[in-house]
Picture 1: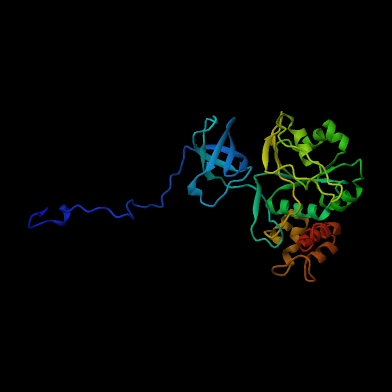
Picture 2: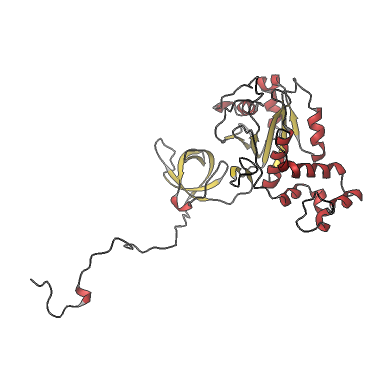
Length: 336
């Protein structure tokens, strides 16, 4: 039986839609203008804990963000269930522009950089004066990463009862870096936390250091109501500490403005991502002297204009030595 008459019109014929292109595609994405502002506190296997107003909200990254990842310290925009109740989940739809970034690579040959912390004002480099022995090359690398990422460094020297701090302070004296020296007894009584806290008010401070230096003990003392971090010991054979912090965590400082971000202990700090030309910005007294440098100058070669600049008395020679030591740290292993 014919379904249609003799003179059928194509417009009258019904066709089954194909399996592809059944929906019109568009590049227009929702702007989420009503999204709430939040801050990422920690990241754990694709789930991000965020602070929205005074509520802790669990969230996941929206698919539209693609490969862009949010890290601790990021300012983000969230939609969905923002109640913070158990078993609820919001979506991060936007990651705001970052003011600063602390980055590292696994080693100097690894092209893949890892963003450790975003929007921190200060990097507290915690190192023990003994047990384990201080590693100046690791400190140098942390300083380079801080200068490159726009963070101001702070040296926190622990266990001064086991060794004097004079040698380390002399090594970094020309850099004019603020520092705090503490002992094991001060860490246990909390006096060390009081002295460090003076350097943290009104700032977001990321703490970094290799295992066993007392970093987590110090963070626990700074934020006593949130003692979620366990502490470890130093191996008597290897001289290395045991990793006790497995992920970065942002904690508000009690009774003052400011945040502490505890990061996992590091045994290496790769600088494959560092552009040496950005490190000079942390040396304003030397930066003006680079105007006569040849193109792509490494600032550690015979034609570098900084030599004449310093010889003419425009800057302290110790500052130039410190700059070149930091720039050369990529060619040296951290244990050297």
